[in-house]
Amino acid sequence: MYGGEFDGNAAFAGGGFMPSQATTQANDSSASLKNRDVRTLLPLTLKQLSGASTNGESNFSVDGVDINTVAIVGRISRMENRITQVDFVVDDGTGWVDCVRWCQERQETEEMEAVKLGMYVRLHGHVKSFQGKRSVNVFSIRPVTDFNEIVHHFTECMYVHMYNTKLRGGSVAHGGSTTQATATPRPQMPYSTIPTSAKPYQTGPSNQFSNQINDPMHGVKQTVMNYLNQPMHLVSEAGVHCDIIARDLRIPPLQVRQAIEQLSSDGCVYSTVDDTCFKSTLNA
Amino acid sequence: MDTSSPSAFVNGALLRRYIGQKVRTVIQVIGSDTGSVVGKSTDDLQIVVRGPSTTPPLTTYLEVIGIAESDNSIRAETWTNFGNTFDPQNYNELCKLASGEFKHLFI
Image (tube, rainbow over all chains, first blue to last red; front, side, top):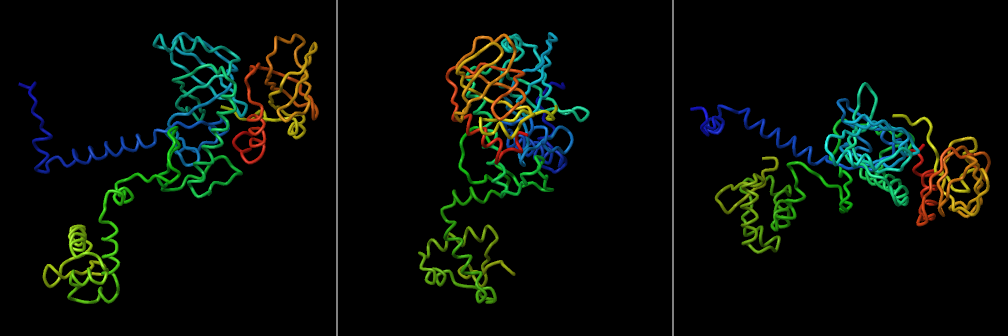
């Protein structure tokens, strides 16, 4: 009797009885969208990591980019194997940090066995904070075999730092390593290992940039709007006939019609006397 | 987590800036004696490294971490063989950047 597929939420959703369902879904999707957006892998020096700003709750950020996963390259200066976990200290020359590697799967244990005290390693992990002390929860570690990797890692740290700070308009002071956290941080381009264009990428629902790419009418619509937003047309009660718009702008009437239809459904223009004369909704 | 005793990336020319402080550098080994190794820094200056009396077998490139004693010698605490295929020019540029424009990421 209770094993049926009766989906109460779906049944009541239409009638507006469960408004929370819609909002929680929206929250979840936006939360997961946010998580996906800030899934960063940042190569950092331990000096940068120690200077990362935090808003409590293990949310760290460096250069305005939220820290999700970090990549560190350094020497193991202390190591204690406790069967289910390995506690070790990694020193990269700029500082040292406590690390923990949980070894529950055979593959994890084998990975840790390849790592010895005094070795240079590359590790990836999440940053944790406990009672003010920062540590790294490592989920991937391997010995460095080609030592050019060390030079590469530090060069990459410098590059990423420069990339992220440049996108903020160079507002980061070089003196302190903690960046001032703005109240409403603009969506930044988190550095990813996939090469991307240098343009800042803006996420969010009002993604007009991508709309422009997909909308071949955009140019025409913009021109028509500029025309209708001129003061003399704004004040005229009757609006402008669309053929006159076409003639003045030297755009084919069919295109003007199409543009006006789209602008009208967007709420930017409205028809006045009949459905051939239009006015901008600006100051309406 | 602690950043109170960093080791600065130095080449031959930068070593003099950090006398008495902890530094790290990579040298190309020219010769070794009991308790010391003579090498060429990544910017072609001579550096003497004083370390433990028993020198293990050395590869072409050697990383030394220790205290800078003068503008051309280091008292090593740790040294690591960096193999034979290390690129000294890259390292040299890294030293210059790490002591210059990007110093705040390191020290």
